[in-house]
Amino acid sequence: MEGLVLRVRLVSGDSMDVSYDDPGAGSEEELIDHVVSTLSNESGVLRCRHGDRLVVLFARSVSTVEVAPRGAVL
Image 1 (cartoon, one colour):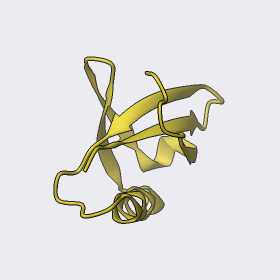
Image 2 (cartoon, helix red, strand yellow):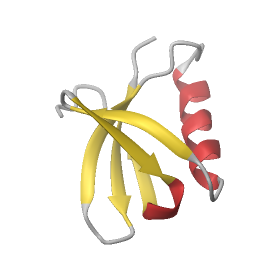
Image 3 (cartoon, helix red, strand yellow):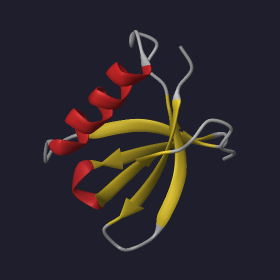
Image 4 (cartoon, helix red, strand yellow):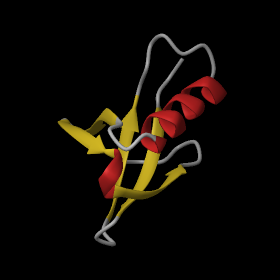
């Protein structure tokens, strides 16, 4: 399955769009559940991409996550 595009709002108020992919996820719902459960833990960390760059999101710096509609462009 293809990855998700997430709009992440940081505690600082800044926001950014990143892509997250987990080849082991069977469906979009499973992938969303994985993102939410990871970021709900205080020590949760997600490796995402912003264009060609690797971005590591730490749960303690994220205030909200929005799953972008299909066709979102990074």
